[in-house]
Image 1 (cartoon, rainbow, N blue to C red):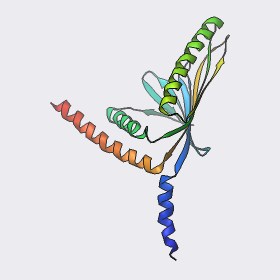
Image 2 (image 1 turned 90 degrees about the horizontal axis):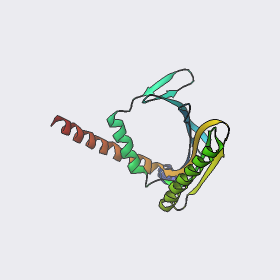
Image 3 (image 1 turned 180 degrees about the vertical axis):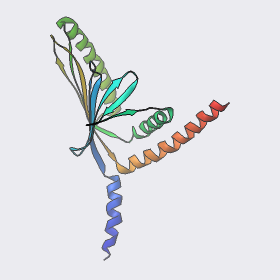
Image 4 (image 1 turned 90 degrees about the vertical axis):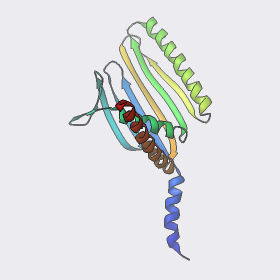
Length: 187
């Protein structure tokens, strides 16, 4: 019996087994700063802190700052990639947490009620689109402090084949769209 056939079989199976990713993001609206983290099977893959100054996103590394310049071709690629991958992902859970405080108890509770209503309306529409997802909102109200922080915890699963296919298709569509935009600009 030839055992060398197990090697390509292993890679083919690996392509179609779903990968469980967890994404965490938090944002402080008063300080205009936040953090983003990606975890693969509970192991940290990437974690970045960022801050927003004027209309630029600045990624904070331990000892340096890097500016991210978003030009039109990058935005087109991101739009195409998200359009391609959204139907291939499977939501497992999505939790939204926030801490809000304006200093006045009545105003804070009214705003928190409106935010809860908006979040639940959004989660209902997501639940209609992805019925197997586990969704939730956790709010913490600070009545006497000025606080405004939001956090999102999301778990999805997707196969490597779907990621590679979406990347290749979005690169092709981005090249086609940029050629079309360049030809329109010349005219």
